[in-house]
Image 1: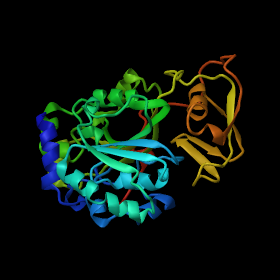
Image 2: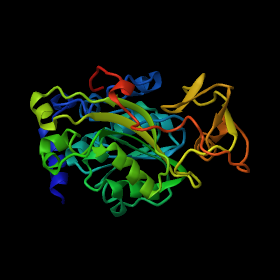
Image 3: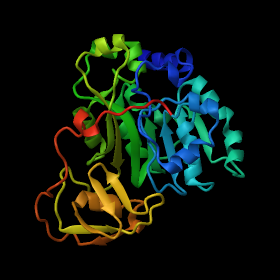
Image 4: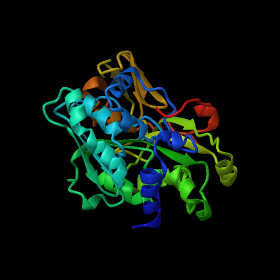
Length: 351
């Protein structure tokens, strides 16, 4: 086992007794969850909640009946939220390599099954390294959705993780995950600091390297959903990091054939029907695509596919074909996908 893997197991299994022991807010959720997530959280056992370490909200919409994989599921908090949202006919599988975390997650399977009113559990947890998913009995092209909450930064071979995610997703499937990113590449010296690595900082990918890796493994058009700057309140940790800026960012990656590496204009448009649960008036695909109910909006070819070739298809009307190309679609993309000014300063702590 890699030394960093051992350090992560020790940090999250032995050194941290609860999320209050963290030295930064990198592994804390800083955003206010929506009402339906708040309601789901009230049904989750307190011990599962206190052992949770996440940096965002890695739960998208329209989940009924889906088969979902959670990479680095920890104490199982997100899995138990998802268990309620997919319904009894859906399935949620959590993967984690830390025994102490898995023990907490498995301890409350029966508790939550009864709490949710299910006849049988729709959640299970597997011990495994997210960098070696091929060692688990997981079929290719079998998951509708794969999530991860502040864990991939802890992986040494991040490209391997993302390549395996692509392999495991069904066509039209999605990876929706929150993680920590930096505004520059982090030195080997900092990467070898076990506290900084365990705090989800020194394992953070430089955002441009993340985009390159994502595209290389098949996720052609990564879309940022939300971003928040990460503050470091611990003086010693802040001094080690120097001028590096860190961000908690939620991305969605789609396994869709036909996505292009630039946003192209085919004269297409869509209209949202207002039928996605908890999104009655409008729907946010990402941080620059908001679709008000019944409004016909022009979109690039990639956005068209992200709605037409996925679980969102029935919730939109689609206009146009692929017959004529009009050049680059204006209004998508940009330089650095997140910044302190964009995200704003956010106050808060762990849920």
